[in-house]
Image (cartoon, rainbow over all chains, first blue to last red):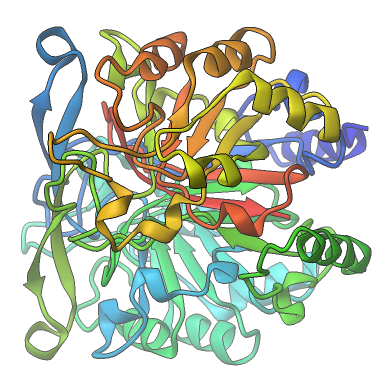
Length: 266
Length: 266
């Protein structure tokens, strides 16, 4: 059984909501090879491909790369990478905004596999580039889809992904202030205290909106022992609920965060 | 429903085979919050925590780290990392041993979520540190567990994980030759051509065994468009079949490989 009813329901859901079906179905030749081996029908990559000029919060190059060995000369290709931890699609660990919070390698692995909930604020963000996802958006979401489950990751879909490659992704103005959507402190507080949500995701450069100077959401969320994921891709390809997210965060000891492979399993 | 029968059968399987149950069950408070949201009962981390002195193939330090901003002075912790791509628990992309093979970011995402098969050669490796998993081991495995499915990842469990932290992990002798188990070329050829397996994993430093000079398995496997995973952890905590592996490989454009978060979902 290939859970064809699930595929159909996802396709219908996506088509009803006008979201593009960006990813191919899993190759039936292996994806359904034995029901006990595969519990999914589809994988959606929520990760941007990271290039040296991928936009960063501070506006500096995302990473440096150097060829160490090459196949033509040495029979093997190996490169050296160098980067600050918070680039591309990446995780923020509790220690990022605390003195003694968990580093990436200390986050319990079970927390990295969880239900993913997508809240769509594209319409509001389109008319206000400093929009913040607020408790009203959560209430509206829950009216339609039910209460957000404990331990989930809640991701804001602002539509900002369309601006990668243009100056609008950072949205820097004449005064050097950034402009892009984020999460409102009151929404973060509600998700933390009223819903026991564990992860907070955005498709922008920061959990806090662009103009923020004091990073209140980072300062509330991370020291509570929770994680954030910034720079998510392809959220528009997902249904609002029913997805399992896997955060493939490498475990460099002591990391405050870092580039991840984030996958959605449906 | 929390698939308690699956949990029970895994526990029984693990206990029967004398393998330790290293990881806690998923917290029922969130892992089972709605059957449609979670299709698993357990997550096993197949990733080692990477320290600067984690053993590497070439014997050089695994990575360098530098503090850029600190919470006590700057209100935020950020570090800079620098490393050659093939360290710790990591993926080898086709380009690692070819001129024009796929880089990590070009591997189809569906290939990174697949059935994982574990072949246990600990007994043989214990008496021969240069042991290579051979076609006979595969035949014996298939006699018990059935044919290895197309598109799977096959991982060798040699037990070498116990030597991390000692010189035996690299096993360098007086002549500078390394000694640790790997995959035999004939086994790789069988898995590639007779089983259409896509991933090849080891709990040692290389797909090829330590003394190898010409890396025949790398040179067969990677140019065929397949990937390898080296330095896997916790394979002994898995059943031989029935696991879904997720390879959380970050997507630095052009990477020949790199540290991953590899998770097993049961």
